[in-house]
Image 1: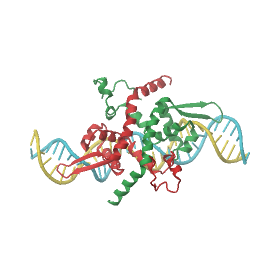
Image 2: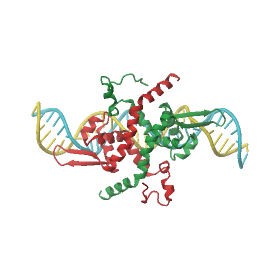
Image 3: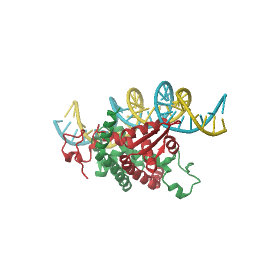
Image 4: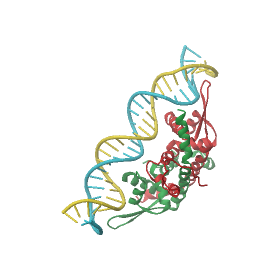
Amino acid sequence: MKKQILNPATSGLTLSEQMQRGQLFSDRCPSRQVLNHVTSRWGVLVLIALLERTHRFSELRRKITGVSERMLAQTLQSLEADGFVLRTAYPVVPPHVEYSLTPMGQEVADKVQALADWVEINLHRVLQVQAEQEDSA
Amino acid sequence: MKKQILNPATSGLTLSEQMQRGQLFSDRCPSRQVLNHVTSRWGVLVLIALLERTHRFSELRRKITGVSERMLAQTLQSLEADGFVLRTAYPVVPPHVEYSLTPMGQEVADKVQALADWVEINLHRVLQVQAEQEDSA
DNA sequence: GTAAGTACGCACAAAAAGGTAAGTGTGAAT
DNA sequence: ATTCACACTTACCTTTTTGTGCGTACTTAC
C-alpha cells in the first residue's frame, strides 16, 4: 500500500487550481478511488439501504438481491475505511453487528440517492431510446 | 412529478409498489444496468467532461488521464445506447466526430457531477479518516 | 440429534473489465 | 518519402472483480 504524500500530478499548482474541478480527471488522484467506492456496483445500493435505516449484515444481504456475502462484506469494509459507514458489533452469540451511516456517509448517500432516484424515475425514457435504436439497427 | 406511464418491467405491480424505492434492490431490474453505466469508472468522467462542453474523441482521451482508446470507445457507446450521449460524425477526412450530451444526458450528468463535487470537496475528510484508521491498525 | 441462523474469512475458479499493440484509409505537414 | 493525426476496431493477454463452497463457535428451534 502506497502512502499518499504528494500527488505528482498536482504539485506545483496553487491551491485554487487544485480545487478546480478536474482533479479527478488526473490519474492517481485519490478522489477517483473514493468515487469508485461509492459508485461501485454494491456500494451504491448499500448506501441507499443504510440511508433508510440501520441494517444488520444479513438484512442487507437479503435486501440487496444478488449480492454475495463476500462482496457485501468487502463493500462494507471499504465504505467503513472511507468513513462513510459505522460498524457496531455486539459481543453476543450469535454475532450481532449493525451497520449505519456516519454523518459523512449521509452526505454522500444523499447525492447517490439523488442519482439513483433520477435513474429509477426516468428509466422508461432510457428504455424507450434503447428500443428505438434496436429498431433502426 | 409522478409519471404514470407504464414501465414494462414493472407492469403488474400497483403504482405505489412501483414508486417505492427498492426497485433497484431487486435483481434483474434494468435500472441497475443503467446506473452501472453512468457510475462506471469512465462513465462518470465522460459525463462530467461533456457537461462542460462538446468534445472530440481524442480530446476526451487526453483529458481523462489513464483511459485507453478501447475503454473510451466502449464507454461512449454504452452512454450513447442509453441516450445520454449524442455522437455526431462529419464525413471528412481525417474523421471528425463530436460527442455531446443529450438533454437527458445533461440531467444525469448534473447528478453525477453533484456527487463528484462532493467527493472532491470533502476528500480531505475522507483522507483524514483513512489516516486515523491506519494509525490505530 | 440435527438443522438453521449469525457474520464473516479463506481458497479456488469463473467471468468481466481493462490494457497493449497493431491495423484501417486518407490527407496534411515535415 | 516518411511520419503523424483522426476515430476507431480487432485480437490477444493481464488484472480485477465476483461467485461458490466450506469452515467457525455457539445458540435456539424442531
